[in-house]
Image 1 (cartoon, helix red, strand yellow):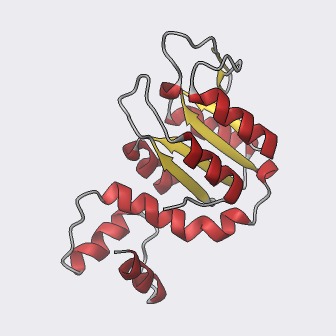
Image 2 (tube, rainbow, N blue to C red):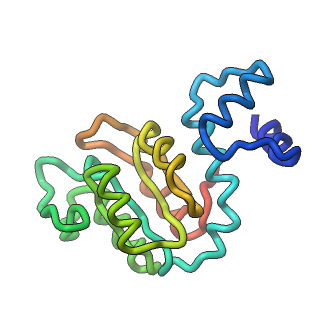
Length: 178
């Protein structure tokens, strides 16, 4: 599928939105089981080189609040999301430490409206997003700067999980390994 997508792009087919991708695949008679995942992978691939060329101090990483440990988290909700106190009770702390050491601004957000508020306030040149596939696909249709995304390994809006090593790899290298 990846080679097909690359061929379509080289022919000038618009794949800039999920709707455009669906239309192109429908014309080809293809119906992928998970259009959102395909769309996320497409956007990661399209943006990887441009993303890599932007300095981390001009990038933001958004982590979902559901990644926090709901029973042990000591973060308080502030103006720009949850303010992690690095208690070490979840992967947020580990990812945050790595991201900040690289120069990224880190935001632990309770939802999409907070993401837009932060984007407007801080005007990053690139974004790393960690979320469930549905939220990532919606955000990718709205965000007009280079992005890299990592899907949650377990979603469900509470005590979710992510492959922290994959997130850190993206932060350090600007692209996913797969």
